[in-house]
Length: 208
Image 1: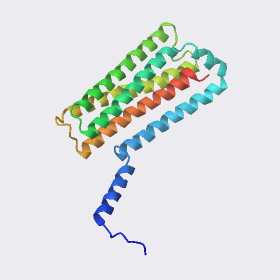
Image 2: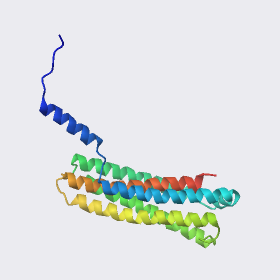
Image 3: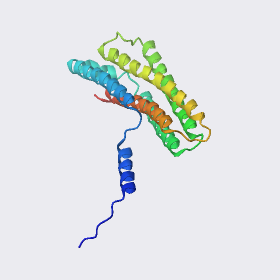
Image 4: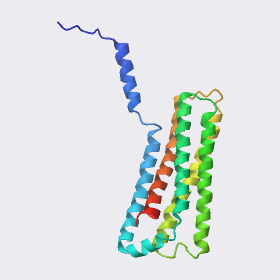
């Protein structure tokens, strides 16, 4: 006869709690709604870009030759590096590693500032060569898409600086569940800013 295992409510409840925790998304539901709305808006812009590109492929391909892929790749490296710092900061906060989350958020913010400086330099170079929003449809989309993303970068840098200061306020490195959710929400926003740039880089600089 098979042996039966006696019911252990404490063990079972602990297992259910663990599985529930494992299934939980980071951050709050509100940040996911915001991200979904933001991605929806950008998706519509991307589809509009593809539609008009299909009407004038030669014009768009010719205009792409004036984009600096080297600067685009440098900015991509900065965004990916900043996202790595943000991911490490969240990990450090969860582990209670005092001091590290704040430092890592500062490094991520510096990468964001570097991205902005390069982008402003790139805009300046275009304008100095007479390339503006009204040059043609391709550059209209270029300035609108990258400009909208740049606004996200500026907001994201503000979020990162807030998180750096927020994490510094906890001297012993211990964060309450509510504090960790705040950290996760801000970090998720920056990851979305990073994702959007990767799509933009491929869309504007690489796809022929």
